[in-house]
Image 1 (cartoon, rainbow, N blue to C red):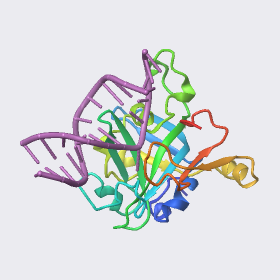
Image 2: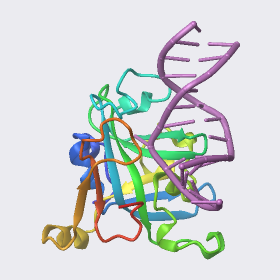
Image 3: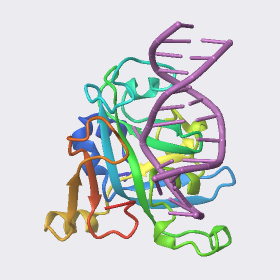
Length: 199
DNA sequence: TGTATGATTAAT
DNA sequence: TTAATCATACAA
């Protein structure tokens, strides 16, 4: 029995998957074999029909992966400087994905830690987490499974239990950094987590 | 071919 | 509030 999240699990409405990804773990294996792990603490949902969604108008070279079947990564460059990682959800041909906005890292090699940088803030933001996990467009379209160097693991039973008994506060708000679709409450984050990008 | 613009970030 | 920085989308 594996705790690795499958394409099947992601093949649902992005509005269900996005909050369900909170508490799950994103795992990255670098080219040198090193493994970095972080708990997902902040997400946003994007899907067809939503003016803020890259796939709102039509399928293009850039947004093509948003239209793919669930279970692949959609990675794009923003502002010519940063990358953003999305988890593609729902059925093929329907554009939808979860933007991973922040991670609470489990650990991080001391020698890589930039001076004066607070550990909790290392992956606090969509561009920052891609930097730390060395995620760029080479991972666009990759299947989310261990063999590809990037995958997801389900919530631990303990975390799920805590969540079920209401011990974990989840906040739902409007999305950040967009000019359209600002009325939709499609952002979720762990209320008490120090790694959340912004409140 | 030319140009405006980001699902951001860190610094002022 | 602004600069950094460039692939993409869309107009022409």
